[in-house]
Length: 160
Length: 102
Image (cartoon, rainbow over all chains, first blue to last red; front, top):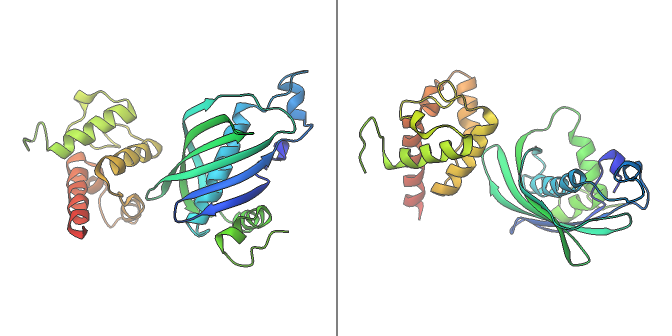
């Protein structure tokens, strides 16, 4: 995870396009300016960044499901629950399942676990749109380095 | 179930309940003649939430993208899709279409 750059997902390790599921890994950095404020002397990953992490895993799932034809943008967070604290160095397992593929929107259920323990979960909603100009290539590059393209069987997606 | 213009069809009753709950609109204000946008003030994001609830409730997929495109291109007046009695007729058609495929 590069918290300051909103790059939350380190690697996509499983993708099942038929079942509509994804599993990704996100390692919390040992140090980050985020921890200086949240909280002084007691570093914890903010819930909003855990939500973003679930959203990014869900976004990768939707991208793969739609064959990288459209870009998902987060529009809603429902039933979010933050069940345990997460601190520096934790290796998180992030999962998402496609609940509904609507016309121009998608809904997922996502969760984060750490060492088998539930950290948080939520239902997330996305509007799906044609890629804004200039976003397609960077998203594909990010998907390639995370291993998503390879798992999705799209193009020359071998991760570096 | 009655198709009385004042109370609407069974489909309308379900859709009106969904709109009331999803968009936090008083149920009594929702009639078959209501225009979802002009009369009820439902914005596009709220309409997506309603579409999700309708999709789930009826086991269909409202073709919102196509509808929006047709309206934006002036091919179809918005009333055809967003006045609730018309929306409900389209829901009924999608349900029937799905049943015919089974």
